[in-house]
Length: 384
Image 1 (cartoon, rainbow, N blue to C red):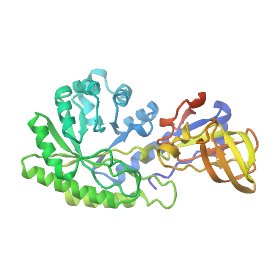
Image 2 (image 1 turned 30 degrees about the horizontal axis):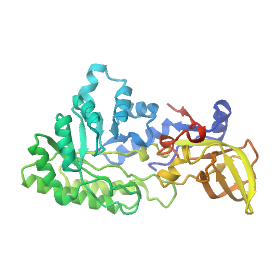
Image 3 (image 1 turned 90 degrees about the vertical axis):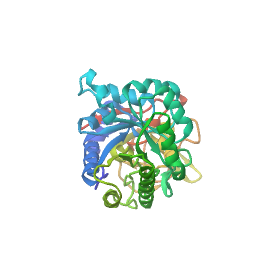
Image 4 (image 1 turned 45 degrees about the horizontal axis):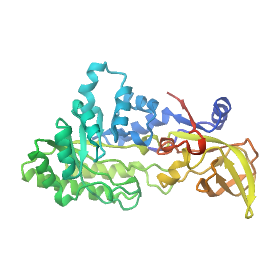
């Protein structure tokens, strides 16, 4: 199964926690490699550009680059992070590979970012006429990908309210970019993060094909299609398997687009979501309103930040065995928002006991803070 975690043993997790302390995020590079291989196997026409924002750890970037991945970045900091970690190429050769290895998919870029990107002749996204003027002035050597607005219904994180040009204005924007002396290489879209409604992809591909046909009729030949991200992780059995989505995508890609079309995607969560496990420690316990409550040394402002920002849940599990009762789990800060769960089934735990959460590799440590002075979890890499 594409995103089934290669589980790290309880014995190893406890050993690492004893050795390095808690909270501890354990990243399994065997799972990263397995997820990348599954993506390539199921979608042979699609080049994977890892969405760095999901987890920008340099070790993950190096592992993915080493097995053939390219990269999707959304800030100049992410661009520089990838560029600095492409160690397999001699420095003077790296610039030649930027076009193939990095796409800047954030449709809105500040002027200094465009200045910094321009020498690399990057591939950048846009979705409005103001951005065309800005790119023309500050990054005239960039290649462009027009991001269009597509349905995000049923996705865990909706993106269409902020980004994407209306398909009705798409070809006019391509023409405007052409008139500005810029080259539009292709189209892109994003169906929303953790997309469990596969119809979003079907509609997006159909819309993209229609826009490309109109563009071709007006003399603008597009050679690239970026199908974005959203590929779901099986956080629970209700999420349909990736293989099922891949069969739909392959059918539609072959039906709608010629073999010469370059197709890329921006999987982030899919690559790393199942590749990390958090180990935390019970630092307090109480009874409140008849419910057992545990306080652990990681929370909403740290690795569990995905609960708030990513609309995701990470079940808290215990290594200790015994009869379970409905319990609440809180993070370490003084803020009541720092509530991990009000309904975990846990055994009777003591101070110092360890708990863990699986499938917590994406949009978790990446958005950790130092709120209240509590540092982010330490990260340990295994199976590199």
